Length: 277
Ligand SMILES: CC(=O)SCCNC(=O)CCNC(=O)[C@H](O)C(C)(C)COP(=O)(O)OP(=O)(O)OC[C@H]1O[C@@H](n2cnc3c(N)ncnc32)[C@H](O)[C@@H]1OP(=O)(O)O
Image (cartoon, rainbow, N blue to C red):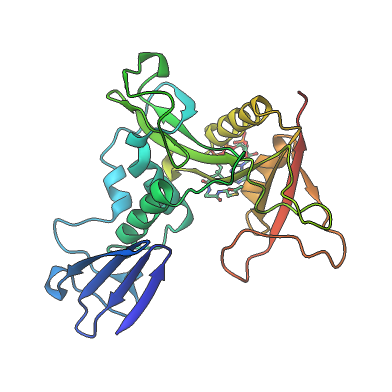
């Protein structure tokens, strides 16, 4: 038996290759059981799973959607985008996962996005999406502007378009050094995270559009700077941010500044851009 914790989901792979999933929603645990007969799995390597006929990787579902569209525009994510946001995140950051773990990851991400976004008082967070196939002015929105679910606009749009890229921007400053002896949260600096563009849409300027929109959002919140962490072994992303005017900040010797919580071996650069308001 093998237990794989995945954020809000615990995945237990039985000795007979059956799969038990538990979605942890606070006090509630929702169990799902997939019998071994559903798929032939090697408990050692889920990434080399032979696929059950009729089943495909969750990322392949995306392949069914249109690839080309004349225009990409960036807007705030809405609830109806949730699955595509989770799908874009997981296929970009964990491309090596195969069914069923890739599917579980997406469910986990979805739950984290909808129920796990508790934002400290006075802070803001928005998830932006780059969309093809629908302009915002064509949007037929159902619901009120005040309705928010996590970082998502809670209104529904029946003509939603297709999500090709994502970015989260906030003023929570969880990964910025704290201020003074009381270690207060830093104000006036927006923070970008979770930037991802679906593989088929890369090198078309979509990430640039997302970053530009995030900067505009930060300005509208009154921020004077915008920051992010980027994995030092991701030269493409570093080039993107340097090209957008970000500069790498040298961390003072001995300083124990916070970093994103990913794999312990990952090294990050802190990049900052000053915003003219
Ligand atoms: C703060 C964070 O979240 S960092 C994490 C970044 N995300 C990831 O690494 C997830 C996987 N990667 C991706 O999703 C994408 O490759 C991204 C987000 C890094 C880039 O998205 P794209 O839409 O392809 O970037 P975009 O087309 O706007 O590129 C702008 C510029 O960045 C640079 N750039 C982007 N990707 C690359 C690359 N793979 N290699 C070299 N340069 C690159 C180039 O200078 C490019 O301009 P050019 O195409 O005119 O040469």
